[in-house]
Image 1 (tube, rainbow, N blue to C red):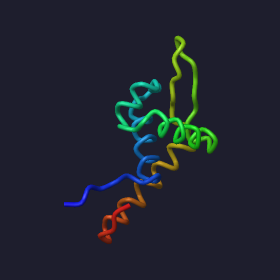
Image 2: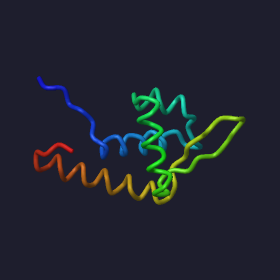
Image 3: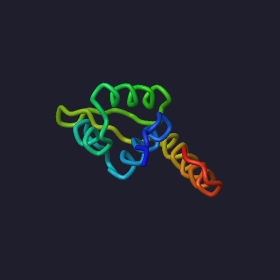
Image 4: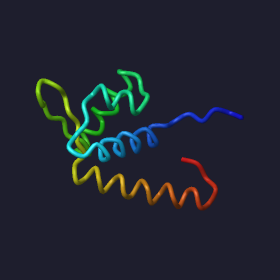
Length: 93
């Protein structure tokens, strides 16, 4: 069986989902572990999400904490809808 690699769309969806599930925010280290991304790849992804205003970064007790914005929640909802439609037609993202 061929290994399935995650593309940028899937990684974006996973980062947003994990950030949303964290509730009040997630620190950088926890996000690294849960997404299973390299530090450099996560930094690039977070930078893109912050520039698109899907995620915000705050400092809490000297740590960077990321939380999803309302715009990020809307993107995640639409991503999930698209993933369901894609699956219904037998396509993988």
